[in-house]
Every structure is written in C-alpha cells, then in structure tokens.
Length: 122
Image (spheres, rainbow, N blue to C red):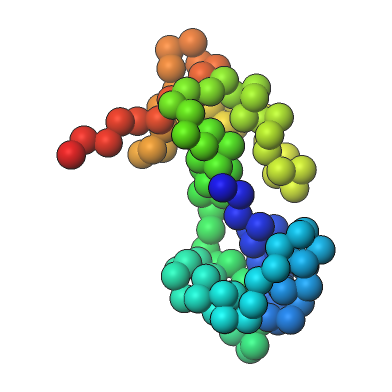
C-alpha cells in the first residue's frame, strides 16, 4: 500500500494543509486520522503547529518504496522497481542495488538485478 504522506510531509505543513494535499491526491482523511498517524509513525514530528518527517534517510525512503512496490511479491527485477518509483524519487539501478545489499529486509540475487525479500525466521 502506498503512503500518500511521504511526499506531503517532506515540507513542514499544518494539519489543514496536509488534509488539503491528501484531498488533491484523492484521499479523504480526518484530523483525527492524521493525529493518529503522527502518533504511530515516529518519523513524523509536530513542531510549531506543523507536521513533518524528521531523520529519515534516503535509503529508508527508497526501502519503503521498494516494499510498497513489491507488495506481496517475493522477487522483482530492479528495472521494474525503478519504473514504479514515485517521480519525486530520482534514483538509479546502481543506487537501488547498493541500498538493497545493505538492507535487513531485502537481498540482491547473484544476477545483481533482482531483489528478493529475506525470509523471516521465527
């Protein structure tokens, strides 16, 4: 599932501004939903009446998008992942491969162009 707030919260905005941006993207959120989201996502900060993302590395953003793009798929080629990245994230096959190599969730297969979810050991 896509996170509509990633791009919106890159700039500090009031609750009203965020709700308006969400509405423009086709989402209908209430103030209470926004407040709940902000409480649950520790990367969202409320300062001076404005919400924004804080301390999120580029790698974390790209990994979130890889997870979103892959959905329930176990493996996916990097070119497909790159094509489905939001326009606001400009990246390369090499950057995606490098980030995946250092990831705890994903691994790069030996062909160096396919991403695989790591299996979770119970």
